[in-house]
Length: 298
Length: 326
Image (tube, each protein chain N blue to C red):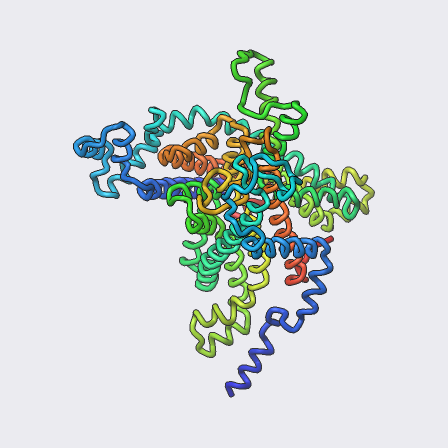
């Protein structure tokens, strides 16, 4: 008996994430040439971040050459800063901070956003109302200013930066997940699961959330990009972790020396630009590949 | 009409609740800030003997229970009292009032640039879908969307101030020039160009993409086909039938986004030493002046709420269908 119900459920369930269609996925993704370029650049940044301690074993804060060496100086392809620190080493080590902060703060935002969104969408009524008012409030207040205030008050450490970025970026996840859950809740495979006596948590986690995965993945890739921009802005203002070399800090340090040493501010900015651009392109490619029905018109 | 009134009353109540919530949050954040405010103040006054600290604590009501403190704080805010900046020896509200016009000028100019250029570029791309112009605009928007705003500012300074020496890069007017009348306005205008473009560029990219998408959406609808079948000229179709209908969501979105513009102005004002509340926040940050920092946060949040209210108002006036939606 239970076997037949299970089989019926499976027949009714929408096709789960295209596991069997991996080749399909790659084909659809590769059709977007920008997305392929983005993936290549992103892979390059990942490799740079992973190999930074091997390429530049010395601390990026350490003086390794004469100050103000121009780019393309022997041994210092990107030049040195006012204290003789290697810009290339700073960029390699900064990649670790950017990627770490970008991805961990996105995880924080997704955890908050999915939890609130799923609860709001599944329960509806007063709970939904309360959560959505709360979400709207966070969407209204200026996020960047709030992040600055939070990091300043809790002292700039990598943890406070990650939490602050997470706190200002979860609302879009909540809205997305709530909408998805609302539309899935009344679908037959969910109703059948309720009829079978499954608990609320079980239904949310095993029936509903797996079906909202692809839009969340697309949103997450875009959120990592904006988190990296946010982190660089914070550390540009002097709110970076004082123990970690980051791209935003390097630009901030080069700001007052712009007339003297343009390369100090230019190269870290190019690094941010390339990384964020790559992530945005990857996000678009994932959107084309995961939501073919919703793919943008060309 | 009654529906419209109800819609607006609802929005007003919502705005009031949001402002109230911001103030409560501000109060909590002030209490979380490191250091007991009284001992911080005593330290800055150069005297830390316990008697003086106790006196300060009583004077500012810090010895009362928390809910009474919140009440005192709220009452103060209603009288435009945002606390006192010990470093500057002036009330925070006076500091902010002095800097507010600078920020309003900068964000206003940036908003006009962003919306004007964004809609123009988006419309250009939408009417030439698939051509090189469309690709170029799309690529430009993608690029502007991925560039850190403060870095754009520095690069513009590098190009137009350091290399070409065309435009000033610091401040709002030439120091000590004592200009008046038209010359003074031109001076401020010249100082405004780079910061306004810097702040506007990112939002221009967003509006361009949105305008393009909305116009393509509208262009597919039946009334456009009807107009074409009636023999309406193509230019008129684009302007009257497509662009006007596409504009409404763009303007609404822009109104909601205006808050982010104010956040971005902290960075731009820091880069260009522009005398606004963003620069004030940065200075407060360097001196660990939490009162001033939180005052700026409260003021920006209230400005955002007011802007959203204004957008709702405009929306209700422009689009009669709002009655259905409300």
